Length: 193
Image (cartoon, rainbow, N blue to C red; front, side):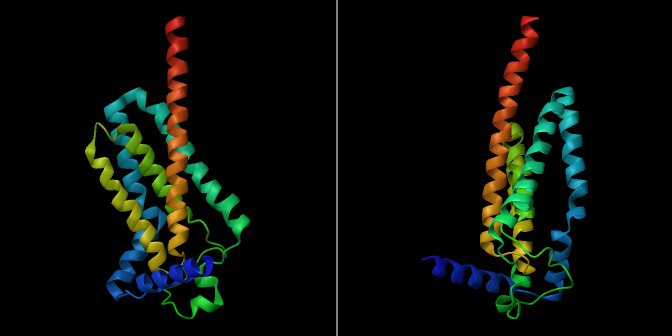
């Protein structure tokens, strides 16, 4: 069963990586670059401060904690624990890939930090303001696009980004729950004084 899943992972990787065109190559390089999305982050932070004012400070801190935790979980715990070579570093697989420029990154790729971080960000936002602002759910398309770009470029297997998405979403839920506990206890203390 495990061998079947491994082969399926490689087949999906090769199918997505095999879609390359010069136009898509350029698009995926832009999509995967971490600095591309700084304007989106700044817009959302600004939006939260405009709409929620001072009430946004604590949730933003918890959201940042969720993202940092997802990054640490992926990079400092999971990658050293599993030591799964990225496809672009795996000699058996890399020769089958169409690789663009030097985007491979570190040796190990399970789980994807890009997927973990973007899904932590979007899941936390959805939990925090998704009921008020329905457009937030469309940010999942952005998270999926970033994750697919990692597979397209041959730097992650589909399982890497899937596990990263699940881990990031799970950590977002945990930190949102911790936010609610903190707000409840803070408000309780404030009203008693």
